[in-house]
Image 1 (cartoon, rainbow over the protein chains, first blue to last red):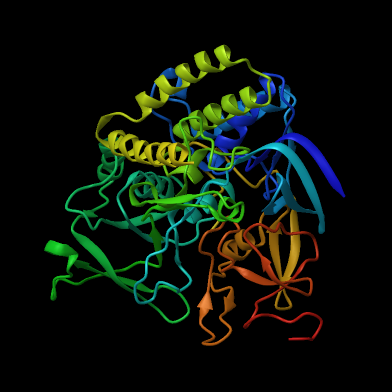
Image 2: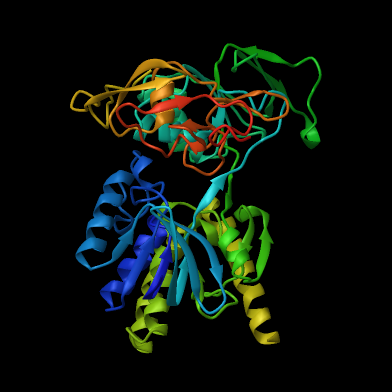
Length: 368
Length: 106
């Protein structure tokens, strides 16, 4: 059976929901599809307080922001289809979906891909042993499922994910034996680093994991110093008594559906790898397909929400729910807030790299 | 180990109904509505399945239904992602060696 909706949003995470709210508030009809049985994407496992301005919920915990956003969407009449996998995007704006073990097609005037990202793995001897997992996996286990996936953890990576999840493992009663960072200095915000340091967690900079040892699961972890050029220094191995290794070595955009839709993809290592080419208005090289959130380049939840609003605003304009002047005013507002989020030593690199995507999109547009 | 107390999230589990599932025929307590993977880990099981060729053990890796490392046979259906499938009373879980079998057909 074929259904029709004005706007189909794929992914009910922070970006997808923010976009849906923007469109529904302007009077558009939106359906959000998500394969999970609960909406919110990864927002509900973020139990730490957010930063930024009051608009970005500074001082508010992630899951409270999620609850608020979800309620606003429901109040605005956004339809959210859970337990629904979007398995394909086909010509003429057609989505293939599976719901209750049955396949259907959905036709939409505009489509927003907000599929998020997945955690990057890291290859080392023993990396496939039970007990080696993504840092986000451990976070889901402790904060959502309320089960500790181990007792003694080694965190690989000292970016914000590594630091925040280390702290949350301790809040759940787990022990963090060490945080291991390949760079010569801690990679995340010092406010997060100080929290774990205060509890005496050692952060080994210029170190990497050599191997995870065990028969049926991780029984110990060997780390090693790395010298110039990231070459391991022989004789510097340290054995750590640990049963779990968490990998916080970055995320990569989930671009499968975008690729299937045939939109152009570009490679931006600093934003996680392959990213759909898109303009300032979040439109891809297919005029009816937009992207927002981590699939458009890895950043963080506050930016994902803003990029969702940006895409939502552009879509609302494209379907005639918002006039050009109102859309322009709204986009200006959102962009000012995005610029705040993309400032400072951590934000500037993201801003520059997002700029590269937009520049490449504009070159493509000019050559068309 | 269950996180029944938490400084931010508060207490957990006391208001949840417990259900009984079987894992390779052994009865096991789980909390109604939790993912199978969480129930197994709460019961101390971390090695979920074995790989098809080398028969190496695998546990959870992503816990959000992306990587399929946690796939097991559930009520006779092989390759079920246990991190995103919730337990029900009487559910039969079998750890899976290789690709699993559909009604005896490999």
